[in-house]
Amino acid sequence: MRFLRVLSLFAIITLLLVGTSFVDSIAFDPNAVKFAIKDSAGLKQFSVFADEGRMVIGSEALLHSNHQVEIIAPAGVQPFTIVGGTGNFQFWKDAAASRAINFGFSRPGSGIVTDDMVFSLYRSEIGWFERMRLTNDAGNLGIGTSVPTQKLEVNGGVRLNTASSKPACDSTTRGTFWFTQGGTGVADSVQVCAKDAAGSYAWRVLY
Image 1 (spheres, rainbow, N blue to C red):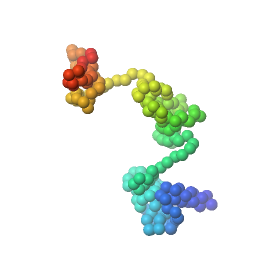
Image 2: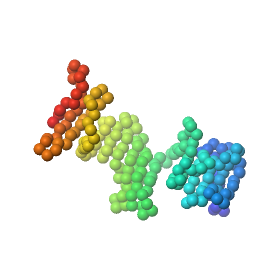
Image 3: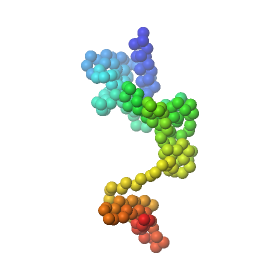
């Protein structure tokens, strides 16, 4: 009975995700596909493969052999939606549950569902802690703070470690800060790309 209930759940999920109004046939393939649900055209819309139970929805085959689950949606269709609850996604590093990542409307364990996108991390020795937040109303991004009041607010230092070549200063790089590390006997420099009153663009030395 438990096996039949699992199959029924798979069928319901498939009907909701791929828009099939009925199950045309159920086939057990002794080769790659162990279980499949087909549409009226005979195309597999849901398949479970023998190789480690990999699964594909909305296609005849997996696009990438190293993926556990794939959802192939037609153009213009949202492939996956979560409504209600905490609206969170979690990714755990391993079965030991020592490290994890969560992003959604809340920090796990807080009991507070917000309107913001909250990025949290988990360590088994201390639990869940918030690392970054993108506010829904103003679009402010906070790193190390849950109440950012500017487009970018950082609770801590910000380092410019520019190992690449400095670009030309023009209208596209206007407002860019650039830090250059000096070699032995040469001072570091900090510059900003800015336009003067005459309309000339240049790197202006701040330090």
